Length: 303
Image 1 (tube, one colour):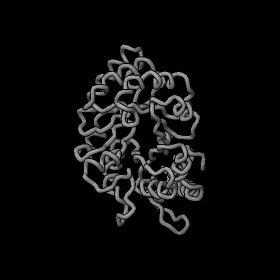
Image 2: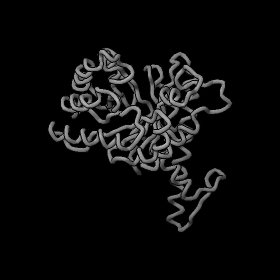
Image 3: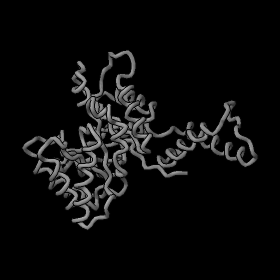
Image 4: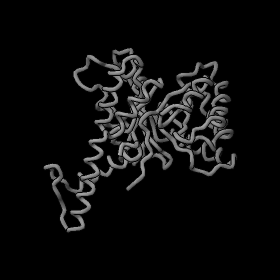
């Protein structure tokens, strides 16, 4: 059964804040990204690279994915964000998050530069992954092409804040539309998840800004999880526990999935194409669903 790398929670951490980066290394997040983009003021973006490099080199990230978010390709900072960080800390970096990706060519631009930096730094070419963030209408229209733009892609991320601004929505709170009659991000997340899964990579939902609203954050996680997303941003450590819980199969579901896998394997050995488990018919499609749940449950320690 395929091993799973969990990305249930992706903790956002400003690269300009040394204490927060140290705390992030000790957190239970599956992934931490050190941010050079929105959480860092324009006059501090260049200065934020050095503490990011130091944090990547000095803290223990061995139990989680370590990534960083570069500035967008429409800024003057992105080029040196790649060169300086990867040249000095590339051996510790798993992924680079690329914000506001609208076209596959932007993935190609970063990939071409990254390969040269890896070569010059003596790093194995291709070991650093790329995570495009979809944040406007053009990106959403091109998301399937973006998801297939490079073998380096390790996830597709939906960014509801900038997407809201690009779409002209009336809200001012990122990720929150409580008066909408349904799940506001159903279409956008479904598109991103479909693109990600067609490329064989996880889909990550973006932030929920009200860190005091635990129930709202849980609901947002549950909505994304039901669409097939693999995880969600945490913008505060207090959101990690809920995210990790929601995006991992609960023990009862995991146990039933294991029984389905076992029963179907036995049926196959006996030459039968389907079997009944708990009164429900199980065929190859059900077995694939169950195998996925079992793999995620084992990775999360719930089975």
